[in-house]
Image 1: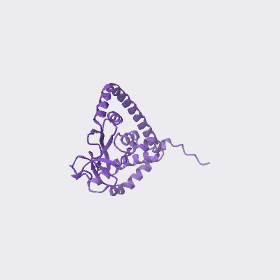
Image 2: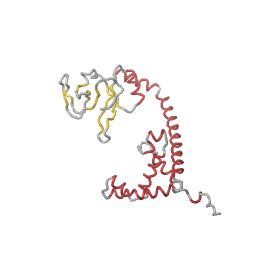
Image 3: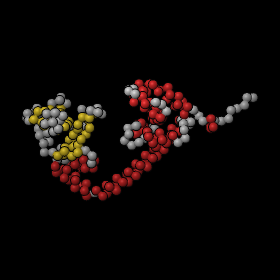
Image 4: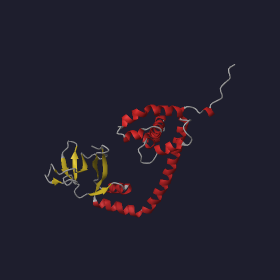
Length: 239
C-alpha cells in the first residue's frame, strides 16, 4: 500500500470489484471509492465521513494545494497500476466549499501564474540544455576517440525528457557520475553498432540479446575510450 503524509489509518482506493462495507453492510460497487485499512478491512466513504466530499482529479497542482489547505479533511485517492507495479495517485477528496474557494483563488491569479509558468519553462529549458552540454562534454572526456559529434547525440538521447533513461534519473542529475555516462554510451553502442535490435525480432529475450552482443559492445567501448593518436604526444626516440 502507498505511504501517505496523512495519519489516517486507511487508504482510499477505486474499488476493483463489487464489495461490501464492513460497518454498514452497504454495497460498494466496482469503480466506486472505498477505504482500506492496514488490516484489509473495507469501509465505504460515508462511514469514514467522506461521503459528501468531492473528488478533485490529479493534475492541477495549484488547485489541489489550495483545496487541500481549505478543507478540514482532505484525503488522497489511489488506484493500483499493475503494469508499473505501483500505486498511482488519482486525485484528492476535499470538501465542496474548499474546492469552490480554491477555484476562485486560481481564477483570480490565473494570469500571473501563466506568466510564471512561462518563465519557469524557459528557465528549465535553459538548465536542460546546459545539463546536456555538460553530459556531452563528459562523454568526450571519457571517450576521446568516439566519432565526432556523437557525444551530443548520445547526450540528447540519454537526457530526453520523460524518457526515464539514465540521463533523466534524479541521481544522475544531482551528481553526474562516470557510471551514468558509461551506461548511456554502452546503450548507444548496443543499439547502433550491434545486431541487438534484430535479435529481439528473432525472439531473443532482453538478457539473451545483451549477452549475445556484449563482446562487440566491450570492443567498441574500448576503442572509443582509447586516446586519439593525433592527440598523443610524439614518441621519444631511443637514446
